[in-house]
Length: 531
Image (cartoon, rainbow, N blue to C red; front, side):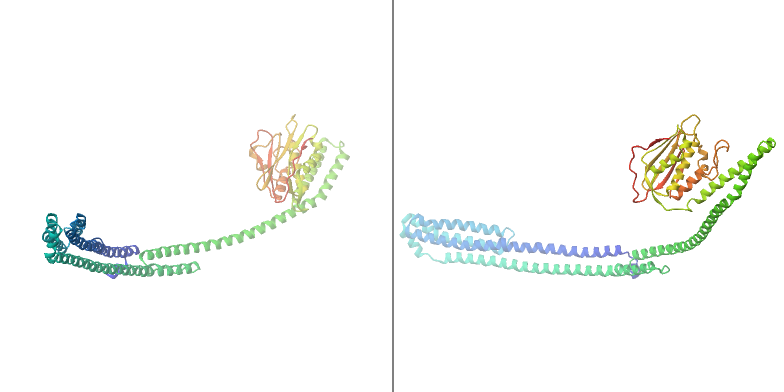
């Protein structure tokens, strides 16, 4: 496999390959370790559970044989059957111990031990047949003297051979134990070697994984982060690359593509911002020009209306003099012309006065103060008492205290209530109700009447200066009242609109800001006033 092919491997593929190799090696080591451990356990089992008990049984077997010989001698001397008990017990113990050693050795056990067991069994049988049984029979038949004579005449070679065979059995058992111990030691050494080898494999795999991650992940990620920080600091033209794994190289390419897109969009944003700044500068210049123009226009309106007062008063005065002095002295048409001149001069004077009042709103100010609208409505009711007559009702309740200019707010309500009184329905007593509702940031105030109302198509037109919805001879006025109201409301930072969802009459809403710290008027028990 070529180096170029390995470089194209992804980090995931490399880690999987390393992990698979390590797992395979550790599996092989584990299989060998399991086999070795099983063998070691077998040898330890031989040492602890076979040769150990067999050695102990061999010692007990030697004791049982000696007990048999002692019992036979005692019986031969005394002839007492009680003295024969050690012989019987020793014989039973001998048979039990020989069977135990044979079971521990097993059918697949050590052949030398199996052969030694047979030799011991044979020599024990030979001793009993040559010595023990004849002595016992002689004592039983002829008494102790006969048995003692047989013992004295008997040779100890049979008994010594029996004990020598037992010693040989012990030696064979020890050989088996020594061999098992040596094998257990060897398997232990192999297990330690396997553990050391497995530890070396794990350490080498960890080192390889560390180097792999450091070369393909850690250092390339650090380098990539440094390049990204440079771009974030303003080097938008710096190309972002990576020498790490294929995943990181792909990530670097994606980040570089994002950098190029951001750089292009940033260029567009800068150009757009420059255009917006230029437009803002132009708008600022236009706003300043518009402000100056409005100021000049207001100044012109104020000066023009003020300067027109004197000549207009002269025209009106002389027309009235002509009317008083020559009324009836000329023909009817002349009297009509003079009346037209007097009426036109008076209407012009009212228009100029209203225009002058409109231009003064916001120009001449005494500053905002706390204004109780209940007190304002009381003053408005007093001013309109003559126009209201005896049948009109002006009702208000729980109006708040707001911050504003009391004279302007009084003018506002005079115009609204005055319009309600002016545009009343014939033969219907006017009822005008003023209410207030508190919102989150403003007071919403409503002035509603039961008059002739306003058509929906004129909802915006009614607030335009000098706009009239009726003929001049039907209702008096110049058509500037609601324009003055709108300008006063906007001067106080509010809004005004016509409510079109009423069955009859006119309903006008306007708002006044709810400023922090401005107290709300306490409810009043006597707020309903009938004009």
